Structures are given as structure tokens and as C-alpha cells.
Amino acid sequence: MKKSILTLAVCALPMLASAQYSFDALQLSQFELRGTSRFMSMGGAFGALGGDISTLNQNPAGIGVYRSSDLGLTLGFDMNSAKAGDTKVDMTKFSFNNVGYVGTAKLDSEIMPLLNWGVSYNRNYSYNRHWRGAAYGIPTSMTNYLSDLANAKKLTVSDLDPVSGSAFDGLGGWNQVLAYQNYLMLPNAAGNHFDGLGFNGVVGAAEFEVEEKGHNDEFTLTLGGNLANTMYWGLGVGIIDLLYEYNRYYGEVLENTVVYNKPNDATASLVDGDASFGFSDWSRTTGTGYNFKFGVILKPVNAFRVGVAFHTPTYYKMKDTYQSVVATDFYTDKGNYSLDDAYTPTASSWYKLRTPWRFIGSLATVMGSKGILSADYEYVGNTNIRLLDDYGHEFAGSSQEMKDFLAGSHIVRVGGEWRVTPNWSLRAGFSHQTSNASQDVRDYGGARNADGSVYPVQVGGNNTAYAYDRSVQHITAGIGYHHKNVYFDMAYVHKNRQGTYEAFPIDNDGKNVRWDVSEHDNKITATLGFRF
Image 1: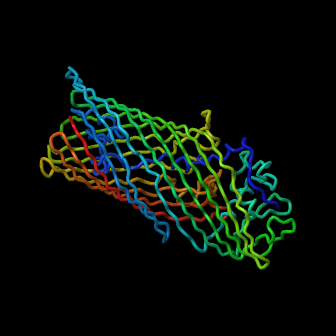
Image 2: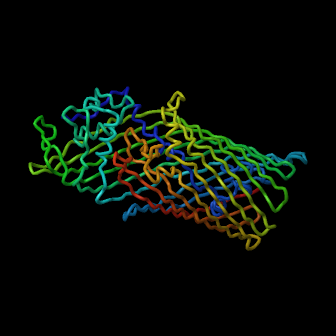
Image 3: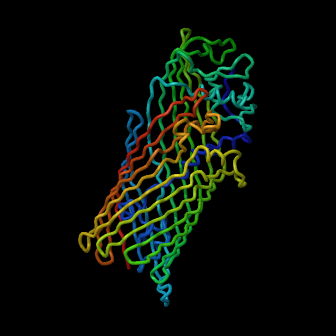
């Protein structure tokens, strides 16, 4: 076996695109509770209320409620804590959440007395997270998974040659090449079957670290009005700017395994020993997209309101840039060996992404001038995510994988406001979001077939890891002050996100290495606005 520096021909590089898989696409489709302080302090339950700049991004019919112009700015301070096992990582960051303007035009009509328009910027999602963890007595090894995958794809030693191999002709990915070139997949004499380093009697430990950063920012243009002060309508178009960058590391230490005693030497032979290796992946994704929003709010009586909104998918054009590196050390009675790092070239690929559609239904009651109670139900159709090549053709099998591995998310939001004095108000809210992964993925690590076997989650390219949410909850509170045409609001938002990080999909024995990740985010925001 001869180790090579990985310099693949440029024509094969598009096969590396890391977002051509269901959970990568899911990550790029996320959004969270962000907007004005009033909106956030009521848990985002504003779909039937309106009269707030954040409704331009939620139910655009809310713009029809305005009777005067509005200009507002929201800033925030985020304190994030993520824990995997016994390891905890804290981060703090200032954020620019929202800015917007709503203008009103009075019409000489009893049927439609006002026509309103608005423009806003909103940070829909912040990717800034940092988590790491360690596990001891792991049940399998990533090398087993990569070997099983290579065997399932019927790869041979020649396929895994980094220059002339066919591992990228729809058969596999960089990880098998990296592992083979660093002696982490052991071939048989014929070179057509591979074994990993984790087998009976091997004692192993693993660690991972993920650092993410980036944003999903939306610029929204909205037009709306009201009909006889009974039905409010709105429609909007959103322009999205997306940046997502990550650095991921996964490593293992395996004791009492079998390794090569003289890597890179023609006389190398297998001997008992220990192995230590680590995979590092870097990726940067940029994208621009657009979506449309439609909404209606009905007010049959002044105390009761009903809202409905629909968001089309966001249609993205994306670019990925990425690189992978693996480092390996062997320890035997005959000596210790540190191999040169094997790495892929830095490369780019282009593709298109269509995110889920969203439906929002809302109810609210207004108790005179004293209080408000509101509730929203939202459905996010994650199984309708689609990945397409740069020409608009869906990637083979990706649509079925979205249906097999993902699940639609149900979100319930409730919120209230009570005016304590003519100038001061108190607010509180709560939201709960269900998992975005299917029950089979959460229970078995893949989709169950009719015979009870499991079809594992599919990953590829330069990335074996995937993550999903089990639940996301928000507990919110806030205060508001207004005097004449000036208002000032503050909000506190506690986010509790329970998720799972899988270092790689299950191997042939149904095993992998995973961590439950608990994330707590505390956010304080302040909004200053003027109505005129």
C-alpha cells in the first residue's frame, strides 16, 4: 500500500458537495425566534395581531393593521451555552436583530381606507455555536463505518486511488479515500474488501468539536391594507443572504487493534498495536435566495381576530467551498509512526436548494385597552426540502431521503401582554417546536424497511457527521414603554434546544458514536421606535 497526497482532478470535485444530503440541507433551512423585542417577548405569537415590524416576516397581513408610519431598530446580546456529555462551551455575541420601516397612505375610500407598505431587515437565524464532547468505551469505530460503506459500494483498492480512482463516480466519497490512504481501512489480499480497526477486543475513545458561524438574513418588502377595518391583507417578497461556515473535528484512540508496522514501506505487515487518528473538515457555504409570503387577518368583532399565513419555499443558489484533512499515529512494539497528514484540495461546488414551505394559523383576543392573548400554530414541511444541481435537476435519490429521514416540525406559540399603566406594559410568551428528524432516525439511525432492517442515514462528500433537533423551546418575557410617538421595548428570551450529534451513520452492526447536545441560549434585546 502506498500513501499519496490527495490531488484529485478538478473535473471530479463537484462530487464533494457537502450539502447534497438531507441533514446538511436541513441545517441550511433553519430559522429561530428573532425580531423586535415586543414580538420576541410574546413568544412570537403575533400571527393574528399585526401592528409590529416583525409581522412583515411572519404574517404580512399584519401590515394592514397600521394606521400610522413606524420606524424601529432592535439590538441584542446573546449568551450561548452548549453541553455534550460532561463538556460545556460558552459563547457571547452582540447581534443586530431587526430594523424596519412601515409607511401608510390614506385612501379616499370607505372600503379600503389605508394602503400600507414596509421594508425590513431581520436576522432569521444565527449559526454561531461551539460544542465539543468526549466518549469512552465507544461501541464501534468510524473506520468500521467507512469500510462497510466501501464494501457496500463494492469499491476496490484501485477505486480509492486519489488521482485515477473511481470513488467519486457516484460510488463513494473523500472519507474512504482519506481513510485508505492513512491505513485506517485494511484491504484483503484481492483488494476488494475492507475491514476497519474497531473489532472485538478493541478498546476505544472518541472526541469531537464543532465550531459554527454565520447567519441567515432576510430583507423583506411588503404591501398590505385593510378592507372596511374588518379584513387585513398583505403580501411580501423576501430576499435572503446566507453564510454558514464550520470547522469540525472527530478523532479516536483505539487500543489492542491491528495496524501496519511500517507505513509507506513495501515490506509493511500487520501487527498488534494502538492507533490514533483525527478527521478535520472545513466548509463555507454562501447563498442568495428569494421567497414569497401571503397572509390574511380577520376581525369579525373587535375582541377577536383570526390570522392565516403561507410562506413559499426559499429558492436558493448556493456555493460550497471545503477541505478535509486526516492525521494518523500508530504505536507498536516495533516503533511509533506519525504519518503525514492526508488532505483534499480546497474545492468548490454550486447547486440549488429549495427550503420547506410554512403554514401559520393564529387566534387572538384583545381585552379592550388592557390586554392581549394570542396563539399561533405553525407547520414546517421539512420533507419537502429539495436539492438540485446548478441546472435545476434534482439529485438522484435526495427527494426520497428527505421523506425517509426528516419530519415536518409542529410549532406552538402563545403570548400575552398586559398594560399596567397607560405607558407601561408587561409581556410573556412560550413556544415549543417538535423534532425535525423522523422517528425512525431518532430510534434506529435510519429508515426502517418492510423487513425490519434499517436503511442508514446517508452522508457523503467530505463530511460524515449529521445533527438534528429533538425539541426546541422558548420562554420569553419583556417590558414596553411608550410616550406619544416614541416606544422602547426590552425582551428576555431563554432558548432550550435538545439535539443529537451523530459522528457518522450506523455501521453494519447498527452502531455508531453519538452525543446528546443540550443548548441553552439567553438573549436580551432592546427596540427603539418612532410612530408618526
